Length: 122
Ligand SMILES: [Zn+2]
Image (tube, rainbow, N blue to C red; front, top):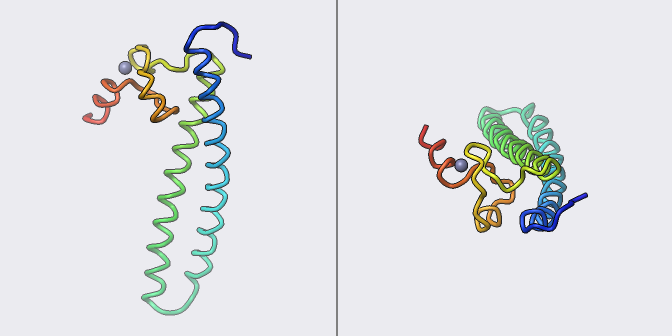
């Protein structure tokens, strides 16, 4: 699957494993978050203003968690797709090769430090 013997390709194999593992964990976490969001919805039918507000707050938190997990899942899937297409390890903005420590800290990193900082300040 991974032809060539340069450093990026061998790293890609390693990160493919890390990303696949993370994706699997995310799928499980999303299923769990959905299950707990369902529980919150059931609780919401309970009587009492305070418990209803609690339930709404919990639901908002559960939704926030679900969104974060879904975003992370998309990022992870995109990184896996980049490995498949051979563009992994490069900044999606300026095509600079990402620093090893950056990918190591976040295998799903899309941008180099400079581009990421630039986007955050937008
Ligand atoms: Zn860049």
